[in-house]
Amino acid sequence: MRRVLVLATNLDQASFRLRIAALQPLLAERGFDLNIYVRPKGWRASGLLKSKLRTAGDYHAVILQRKFLSPSEAKTLRQHARRILYDIDDAMMHHNRDVGILSRWRTARNYAATTPILDHVVAGNEYLAAIFREQDRSVTIIPTMLDTPRYLVKTHEPTDTPGLVWIGSRSTIPYLEKSLPALEAAAKELPGLRLITIANATVRSKTLRVEHIEWTEDGEAAALCQGDIGIAPTPSDPWTMGKCGFKILQYMAAGLPVIASPVGANADIVQESVTGFLAKEAGDWPGAVLKLARDEQLRATMGPAARELVASRYTLHHAAKLWAEILAE
Picture (cartoon, rainbow, N blue to C red):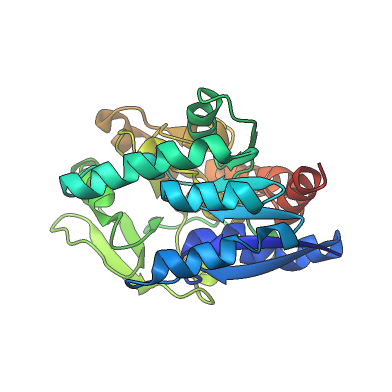
């Protein structure tokens, strides 16, 4: 069994749960023992982290998850590690675009210090991969994949109250709020239209009936089947371009056709007119919504096609196979 050190930031963070923890037993079956180390916090954090980095030589490889290292931390790790891998599913180099000058400076400094020490990058989409290729790093694209069997499959039946379903969090609610006028325009044409939000926050509308389901990890799969069409409206900016389309994969795993903005990995995942529609402009949304909401047979065709695509390309077993190949190098 080859031991691999994983430097994580937050064990409850979706990125860690979906891209590391979910793969841990599958990689163990392939001979890799992931040893998780949560980065310390507080004034002693850097010293404690460096102490751990000095043990990197005891491991077959080290995986940095999302967060970059300071220049001194990066130097310490490079001195001791046999092989350094970096896993990224968000545009972390742009993450602090709305914060203070010091935070932006620190992010840029740490990104510049970490990138040169990396032996291989595992990126969640092509946009992220291209950033590291420009720095002459070796890159493999592994989307944030899912455990397909845990998702119930929607049975599409005729309904006068078709439901749009959106899954997300308080941080991404603004994306949904921005799309509300387009969704409300569709609701004016189809009064029975509903919007189901699965999150820790929701939106309000005077035109569109909104139903909220509080998100839980155990309940999200069943909650998705309360809707008929998965939606993923997303603005285009340097941060969102790094998004890896996981919510779209969730919709598809639940057998839902999808309407999504062609941002980040969305355009690579959604097969136009096969598993859903890509709404390039705000004006494209009402027509796409109405087309699917009014046509049960179209939903019944696209939904299973979406599920089949996820089951064939985006499973945890596929991700584990790719990771094992990288770790074995």
